[in-house]
Image 1: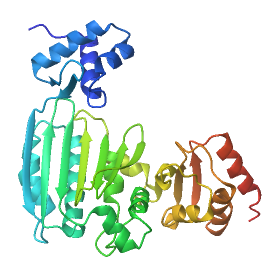
Image 2: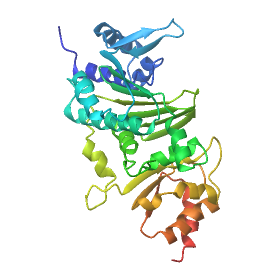
Image 3: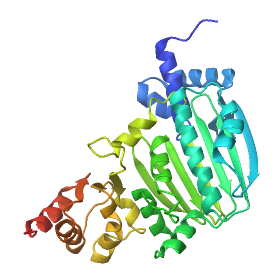
Image 4: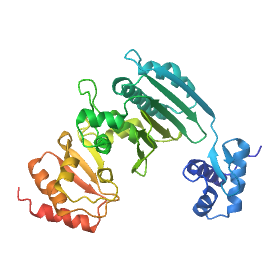
Length: 345
């Protein structure tokens, strides 16, 4: 059989990598990307169907494409202190991933081990299920438990105002309900190692996507317990140590000293960030870091009191914490500059 040309491989890889996000318009999306006809794209789609990489479902009006699993494995375990996450990885999960490159394997081992450990120590559940799905361009790991729900658990144990506040705290890192046994780093780093990371729990859907660094919170149907889903391209060039180094101090002592906080997680529906109380909730635990990247992506404006609380009062009282604003617009820049102008310390 003749091998496809480099351009054809590029087009087919693009289809495989984007079909999950564009199941109904993948032909148009690909045609626009490569400036070729829709008919030409359909020839590539049909070839992928023949190879068994994708499937088509639905009638003409509802036609959509899906990745076809190479393998699909599921197993469960009873949650108890006797369960050891490294044994689950070594004897059950690792043998299923024989053709996965070493660097991606390390990411999977880290992420799954951290999530299983969280289930054992924090879920308060009785049973957990692990799903492993492998596709040509994608590896998916899903962990489900029947416990209290991660956001509800954090809200209760940390005395937070509501479950959404728990998501903001998780995104900062160094959050744990059991500091004697955990550092609170597992979810922070796992969410940044995988291409996409999702938590669904008790009516809330939280997701983070790399490399675009998109964050999302949505209301979802009430589902008891917690579902964590992690996805990565088996050919990803991401290296686990690089992710750790991004948030380490300049002395490269591996200390988790930097964090990235998306302000979009601090908003509720269509409310604006205007008050000092909103700022104080945001600033909680910033003292645990040397550097905080405050990401204003998706934020149109902020209030004077909100800016003053962060960039004048907090900065003045916490000189060891450097707050760096990123993805700002003109309005936000002016508010920050106004607050800094009055900081006489």
